Amino acid sequence: MTRVLPIALTLSLLAACSHHIQFIGTADGTTITGTHNLWRQTIEVTLPSGARLDGPYQTLTTDSIGERSLFFGANLTELLGAHMSGRFHGYARLTGQDDQVLEIVFALEWSGRGYGVARTSTGPEYRVMF
Image (tube, rainbow, N blue to C red; front, top):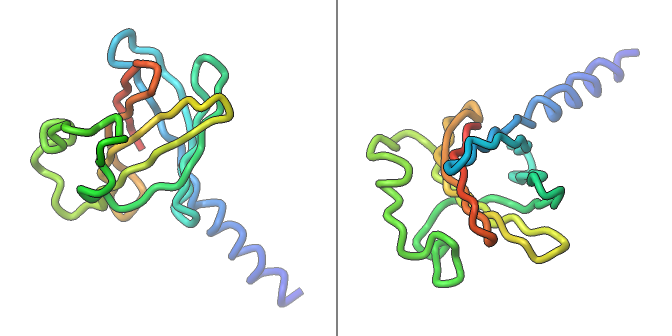
């Protein structure tokens, strides 16, 4: 019985590390949801087409936004805003079985809340709320 409580507490903390993400289409307001896991640093989303995309996220650097990125040449200060201090700046490249790609640049607070911008390889762009 004494082992059950620590195990239950650990499992609840790990579960609490997953948060919902809301993607809002910039062209038509289409809303989709996904999840991000702070513990594993991963993001998963299912697009309106039914395509399931997932992948890890990492600290946003100039190397993240290389020539193969959908954000190559973008002004990140313009996309995320000038007031980004005190936040984790991240980049994610999610892929699916059909070679579709969704990239996200974002700013997160320590609590896992934040915002960002996402682009797909098929064209749609989204505002992202963590």
